[in-house]
Length: 204
Image 1 (tube, helix red, strand yellow):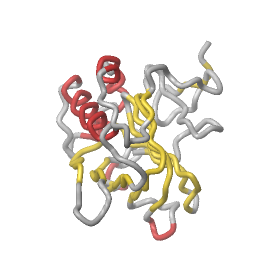
Image 2 (cartoon, rainbow, N blue to C red; image 1 turned 120 degrees about the vertical axis):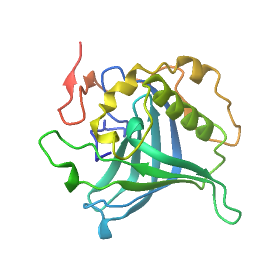
Image 3 (cartoon, rainbow, N blue to C red; image 1 turned 60 degrees about the vertical axis):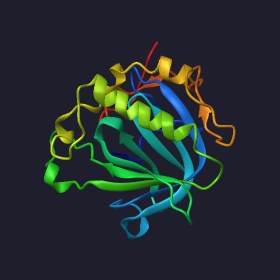
Image 4 (cartoon, one colour; image 1 turned 90 degrees about the vertical axis):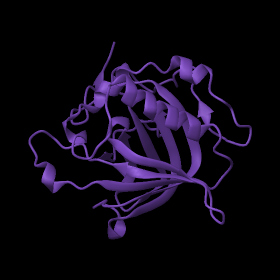
């Protein structure tokens, strides 16, 4: 994971080279623990989830302390589960490992627990696409998510996963406000990122 990734002024994440955004889902509630910049170390807020062939990014509608966004590489997510409680809203829960700079000690970073709650509208489009995409990313990269192995994997490997066919044949739930990007959203600039720890740069 990476806290507060680079965003454009409209809230869209600044893309990596080779990144394709699959969907955006507004009106979700997001919970994540072990966030130093959030009050009490736990962020709980509403906003938008962006899903791409590399990662899932939550962007808060309003900052919580200094927390405004959370980036979860798909190859670093594990234990994901779709929950349908009887008396509460449907949600996805799971764990995500930190993206640790090469110069820093992995032992100084903790695994995060996250939850995405669908309180506004259905989730019949988002959930199948998310679960199919994360399964495809692992299969295509011959990777099985385990906490012990995750930090040694380059999260950018996921960019090689083909997603066009999956997007074209996605089931669209009329009660789910998820927006599927059949064309990539127009960026405010030509900025692109090469990796998780370097700055964005212009591409011409």
